[in-house]
Length: 177
Image 1 (tube, rainbow, N blue to C red):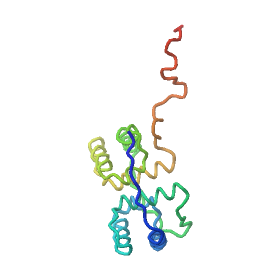
Image 2 (image 1 turned 60 degrees about the vertical axis):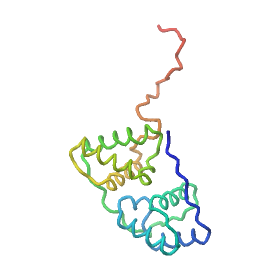
Image 3 (image 1 turned 120 degrees about the horizontal axis):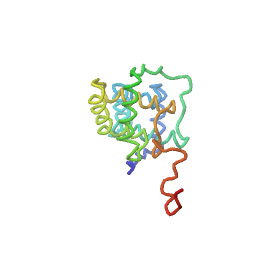
Image 4 (image 1 turned 135 degrees about the vertical axis):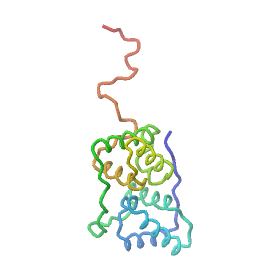
């Protein structure tokens, strides 16, 4: 079952403040995944300015939800360059995608859940290390998964392993020839 998360609901003046802060920092929302120090500092500055106590997960969830609804600003070309994404071999990438599928997609969650759920991200990092023998911090694996998603290389909820000719149980009761 998919994980549902309630979004924070800032007042109008707080939302405007958040947008100004976002423009000041010039870091696209998805890049915060690979920049935990910047994300933490951004959240501290937000909470201090707005006199709030939002978590990083709640704040990022709000901004991503607003973006998905077409209600968030775009930085255009005026943003910080993305940090380099962790390089993985083809085998490591395949292992990471399989681990993602088993721990996220099969539970009917999308890839965004990784940015909000430290437990799942940590579990993926532990399983990745067990599978590959290579330790990579969870935030770097989340950034890698986001890069793969943006390139269309991650399975979507409910799609992995389905053959387009697979008719499931639709053939029950039909004669077998």
